[in-house]
Length: 119
Image (cartoon, rainbow, N blue to C red; front, side):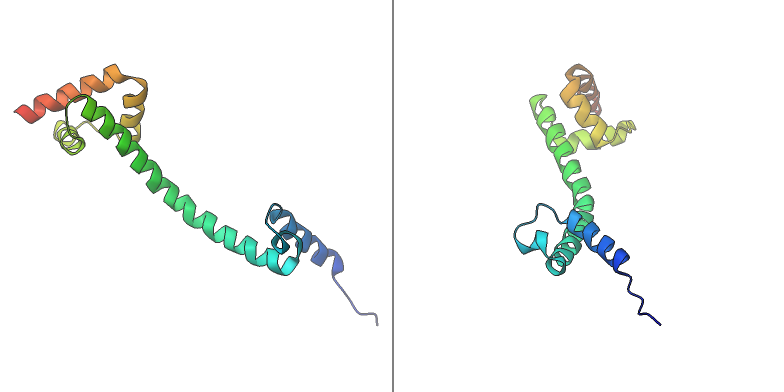
């Protein structure tokens, strides 16, 4: 009885992995053994950084809101506290977009926040 070798599936699997490793430096893009390690490592970084991206974006929004608040004469922490007191439920992403795109509307919100802080 002849020996069964599944060469077609093996070759397909290896080609698929080497295709994912295209662009890597040296052996990592050419040899299966090293490419497998590098692709596995890249997947781990990609997974981790999808989580970190959310944190980085939130930080960026806070920086933008803080800059807009300072231009209007209020601190970020006091602004957020005033929004909570007023029950204005805009998230930081929306506030950031307002600060960049519609300064007039953001100024209105800041005036309400300042009025709340004076009370």
